[in-house]
Length: 233
Image (cartoon, rainbow, N blue to C red; front, side):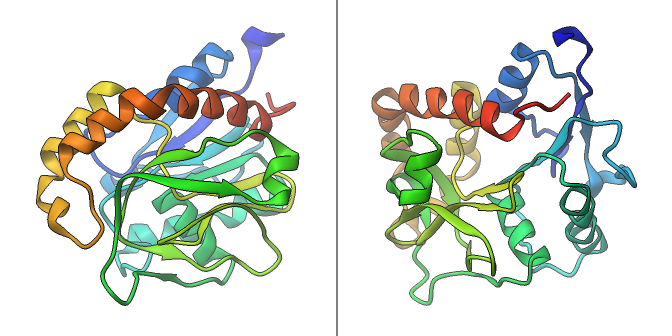
């Protein structure tokens, strides 16, 4: 039955965005992809009964923005939560899930960002779930409060809440494991203006860090997707 799984709903936020390695790994696991871009007018399903779950990716906008599509997307997250369907929010997606659950999304008071490679540490709950990488790739200037009732799975220094689980099937991660080499090179070029922000790393450190840390991050992502979409299909 592995070739008859229901598609995973993929929610992207820019015209040129791709699901990167998340998409590649899901397809290797025999999940078709249903790609939607709400920011460009795509609708979202009223139910996930025809999907194996959903992944909401990052983007340059904020979960605090007042654009209609941002509000609608945050409100829509009630669908996977109520239906107890597998859900993964990445960066902006994790922040949107936090907003849906009543938590705040914020930037650090000193303006510090995480743009580059930064260490994380799994909590006891995180270690019971799986093995976590020690260094992860980040590209954000806002973080989130841990939603009430959520389990913290991994923490960081500049932004303490790095990964969490709400209920049994909803996950949010602040960092980016989905970037292919081509995606990272594009981000380094297009995001260069942000490398002067407090605590940001220069572009060369992004690519050098990839050589050192990406293999472990990719292995984590492969295993993590198995956990998120366990028994889905």
